[in-house]
Length: 239
Image (tube, rainbow, N blue to C red; front, side):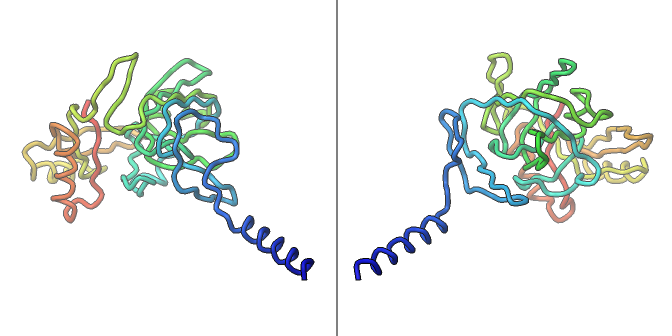
């Protein structure tokens, strides 16, 4: 009876260990970090951070563009290859990250709004604009150092100075066209709309943006109000 009881307890322990959900990464060594629900890609478990006070990482950056342009990102935004954003496997969505190309010294600041890249050795996937700013569009990949600036989407620290992004002016892009007349017709429907020209691989695009929203909330309210007319509209920080 004792032997049978011992075998039963052993089996119960093994079953419990096999079904237990691990909540904390075994190699977690960051200070002041909190993790969200893990996710699995290609058999590998990742532990996204909901908060981390200090983070640096060195590895390879790549970029993604036309195929994903206009599709939803991990935080629900529509991916805009011309915005300064990036994908990271675990950093908090919405966090601001400084990226330095260790091969040429060029830098940029991006917002993490997506997950990836899920290729060994690569630590960040930049938008086309982010890649262009650090000079990796043609090369495709480069060794970089990334440093977390702020885990909050509306705050950014640059050179020790706290910049409140919520107080910046924002624009909402409501359309992009290869034919100027089509962009013009759309822009004429809104008094504050403007058209910006952008060239990519020999093609010209005319982007229609509603400008001069005083803060992010105003821009988000516009998107909510016109969600039926412009289902693919998205917010960009105004230069």
